[in-house]
Image 1: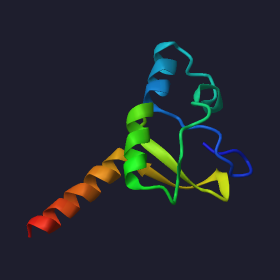
Image 2 (image 1 turned 180 degrees about the horizontal axis):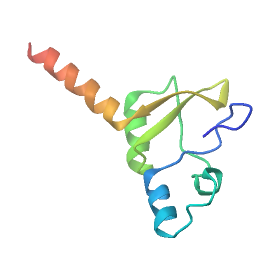
Image 3 (image 1 turned 90 degrees about the vertical axis):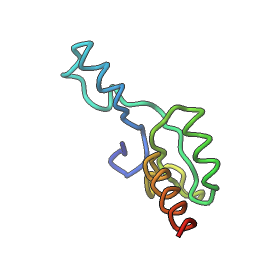
Image 4 (image 1 turned 180 degrees about the vertical axis):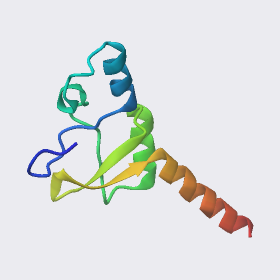
Amino acid sequence: MVDEAGALVGLLMAHEIEEAVLDERGEETLAAIVSHPPETIFDDEPLDEAIRRMGVHDQQVLPVVARGNARHPIGVLGRDDIFQAYSVASLSEQA
């Protein structure tokens, strides 16, 4: 989630939505249930570091930010993206 200025303020996780629904907090705003602050990755960091952070923080996705402006997301890297990239690379090597 970003604020009015486009600054990263949180990451809404599926388990947080599930907990809110199960706790009958469906009327709460998303801002009230979002994770603060999310773990991020800089766009110049290696893929190995992104994989490590996802594992350590048990996140399915990492917002990607630039070093010059770490509060403004420029993208999102997901575990599925990484698995797909490795699969494509593996198939290319086998061909």
